[in-house]
Image (cartoon, rainbow, N blue to C red; front, side, top):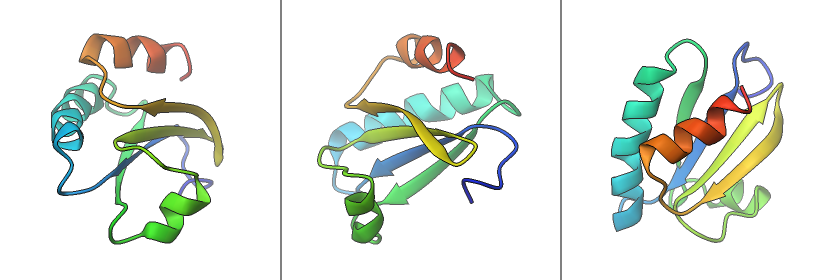
Amino acid sequence: MLSGSDVPVLVDFYAEWCGPCRMMATILEQVNAQLQGRIRVVKIDTEKYPQLANDYQVYALPTLVLFKQGKPVERIEGVLQSSDLMQRLESLI
């Protein structure tokens, strides 16, 4: 999934019960639409995949991890405004 992607992959670690995660989901939809083709967004429910959350040391929700060529290059915890997230991602992709 991550190492085989030809574009950077932004992984959204979330939980259904997490209010800030729901806010971030809307922001991620906007960012994904703006960066279509330049980035891939993948959502991972930490309740269903706790081992993945543990492997990537996800202790706060929401947590976003940007992978380039299969390696994590950026980590964002908490909710950001769309413009702030875009600015951070633009500098990395």
